[in-house]
Each structure stands twice: as structure tokens, then as C-alpha cells.
Length: 283
Ligand SMILES: C[S@@+](CC[C@H](N)C(=O)[O-])C[C@H]1O[C@@H](n2cnc3c(N)ncnc32)[C@H](O)[C@@H]1O
Image 1 (cartoon, rainbow, N blue to C red):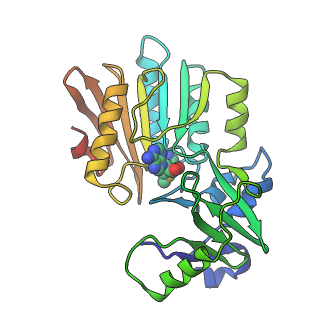
Image 2 (image 1 turned 60 degrees about the horizontal axis):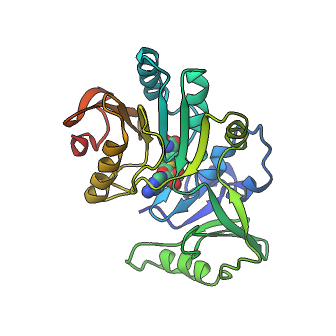
């Protein structure tokens, strides 16, 4: 598991940061301008439950090219469902590439905002559902709630700081938007773009998509095989017959598995760079 205490990248020299786990300061999100190119850098260190919100621009070049090819060849403009978008930087890129070739674009994540408050100069972040403290940020450290059972001194220290943080107080917390301001603005201007919270473990309730993109969400370090199977079953029931599912992974290199859905289920259509690690769980 990743270290539950990281250095705040703002306040240490570069040479030292090469030796020790470190992260950007997510408190920078609070007053970030709409045009910023670096929004995703400050969302990425946030961890909610088992998943990090890590994302960055231009990481889906191959997947987006394959999606564009599909969109070009469809008779009508597709409904696109993008799941687990983090701050939506990669959604903004795909929307721009699609131009006018989409009917609806659902940009979704399990959480689009996070309760936050300032306490004695630190930033304290809470789980959006159970309101437990999940992260505390000072000028020197980014501290995560250590989730694993084994008790190493560093995990005990992390949990000490988390447990001594002020409890969630509805009067004091503010809601920190996790979605890039440009995508929020675009969704207000263009009613084809819908930003909504959606848990991939639950059934999709809106228009059935022609194209589903799920990037860096369904992997075995975040979810068990059973959970992945449940999510795949939901994707299967929502996707139109003849529709396309793209599963994307970015570790060392970008990997993509592209499936089409027929009456009997998903068929593997193509893989790029060997495909996703969960390819076998989809078929
Ligand atoms: C590593 S980020 C990937 C972000 C983006 N898709 C990319 O590839 O850059 C994983 C995202 O999945 C979201 N996520 C985690 N569990 C989820 C769930 N059950 N349903 C929907 N999204 C989920 C997280 O909130 C996070 O934003």
C-alpha cells in the first residue's frame, strides 16, 4: 500500500522530494481560476475509500482515437457515458475531440465534491458519505487515513493525526468542487453535457449509452473480482446492443480493451498494447 504520510511538495527542495513520497497540496484547489491547466495535479493526491483521484491530461490518446473512429462510423451521434472521471480533464479532451459528434455526454464519478474545512492552518477533508476524516493537509505533510490493519509506526502516526482532527460539522464545512471549472462551465452552457454523481456498482438510470469509457477505475488494486463483475454486469445492462465499451489503463503505458455488445454479451473487438488486466473478467 502507498505510504499514508507524504511530504507537501510546496515546502521541500527538489533533491529531497526524489527520496521521499510526496504530493501536491490539494488546498490549492480552493481558489483556482477557471483557466488553470494544473487543476488535475491538485485533485490527483486525493484518496477517497480505496481509490485515488489520480488523473492527468493527454493520458488517453490511444483510447480517444479508437472512440473517435467508432463515433465517426455510427449512423447517429452517440450517447457517451464516461465513468470515474476524477476532475474531468480527460473528459474535456474527449469532448473537444468529438466536436459536434455526440448527442449526449455523461461525465460521471462517484463523488464530484468533498466536504472540507480549515483548522489551525491545516486543511481537513471528510468522506462525502460517512463524514469521517479521510485526509489532513498541512504546509509540510499530506496525511491519509491508513486503511490497512497492520500497525506500522507510520500508519499509527497517520491515524493519530486523522483521529485528532475536528469532527465533521455541517455549520463549518464547505464543499470543495473536484470537477475542473472549465468542464463545469461547459456543462452549464451545453445541455448535451451532463455532470452527475454515479456509482459504477449501481445500475445506470439515464439514457442508454452507445459508447462507455471507463478509465483507470476497474482494476484489481481498487476492487475485488466480485466487485468488478458487478460493475461489468451494470455496464452490460446499460449499453445498447451494438454499443462499444472501452476499458483503459495507464500504468507504464496506455492499454485499452475495446468490446462490442451483441445479444449474448460482450465480444472483444480490439486491444491496444495488450489490453486491460481485467479483459478476461469482461467476457
Ligand atoms: C484513478 S482515477 C481515474 C480518473 C480518470 N478516469 C483517468 O483515467 O484519468 C479513479 C476515479 O474513479 C472514481 N471511482 C472510484 N470508485 C468509483 C465508483 N464506485 N463509481 C464511480 N467512480 C468511482 C474515483 O472517484 C476516481 O475519480
